[in-house]
Image (tube, rainbow, N blue to C red):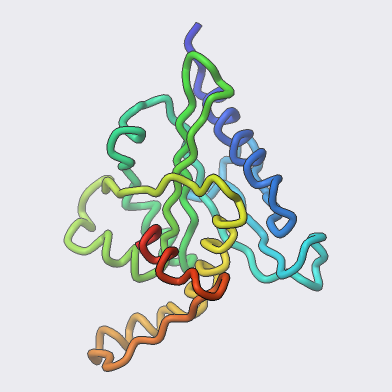
Length: 197
C-alpha cells in the first residue's frame, strides 16, 4: 500500500528527532502537521549538556521536507521555492532538511541538510528571483550528531555576523579583509572545511 503524505512527513520528522536525541546539547521542537508558512519548528542549542535555559546558545529555525523521490539520493539536489527563500532571508536564515523515506520500509530514511545564511540565500536568488523554485544542493548529514552540532554552532555564529547591515556594507564597498571564526575542536579546521565547503 502506498504511503500517504502525512505518513511520509511524520516518518521524516521521526527520523530527525531520533537522530538529534543522541545529542545532550540540542533540543528539537519539531511539531507534526505544522502549518506555519516556510518553517517547521526549531532547534535550540546549548553550551553544556542538560538543556538548562541559562546555558542556551541560540535557536535555529528549520524547514523539513520528507520525500520518497530517489533523486535526492542520486544528485543531492532538491527544489526550494523562491517565496520560501525570501522568507528565510527576512528571518536571517534557516536549516533546511530533506529526508528520504523508503516507501517500502518507512523506518529506512536518509537525512540531508543545507544551512542557509543571508549570503547563501542572496547568492541562490541572484538572477532567479522570477522563478517559482530553485534546485539547491544538499549535504548528507554527519553520522555522528556531535559533528552536526558544530554545523549548528557555526550557523548561529555566522547568522549573527551576516546581518543585513553587513550585506549592505559589502555591496557598497569591496572588503579588503575577511575574518572567519572557527567553532569546534582545535586542529580540525581543514577537515571541517573540506567536508562542508
